[in-house]
Amino acid sequence: MAEHVPAADATLPPRPRGGKDAIVAVATIRFQRLGYHGTSMRDLARDCEITVASIYHHFASKQEILQDIILRALNDLISETTAAVEAADDSPREQLAALVNAWILFHTTRQAEAFVGSTELRSLDPQGREVIVALRDRQEAIFRDVIERGHALGTFQTAFPREATRAIVNMGYSVASWYDPRGELSPQALADRYATLALATVEAQA
Picture: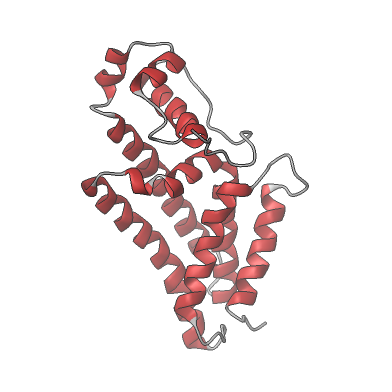
């Protein structure tokens, strides 16, 4: 089976031994590299150096592990992007730049989790997908609120604020699939560039 591998593994979560966090860390790595369907509970047990029964002590199923990974990542992402907007001044331009900065930093510094959250949405069961999609919609609403406010104030002059929102959100999702921390751009340098691109997308006025 072909591997699902972003450009580099340097931003993978640490791999503590034992306990729920260890299982989540190892599962994130395996789901990133081999995909959800390419990973078994036996694989996770072997990499964690525990028994399969020990995994079931913490999680009822592999599906539950996947949901846990994505829920953790999305909740942290929403917290970080919300804080970024709140810390910026009242200008829609500054708020969008801060929001995109937080968005790209998350997708580069927590790349494995972001990658799994983006690519394995299709592997969630209907109930899990409903929960995750609601959180993704909440995240997108943070972008939409900033962009629509900027559009209403005349700060953002794009004629297509809805499409601009989707394009900017998708920038972050795609970064997790190709970013290489060994490359020439640091996470912050890339975030700065993407903030500039986002402001151009909405046709921000000075």
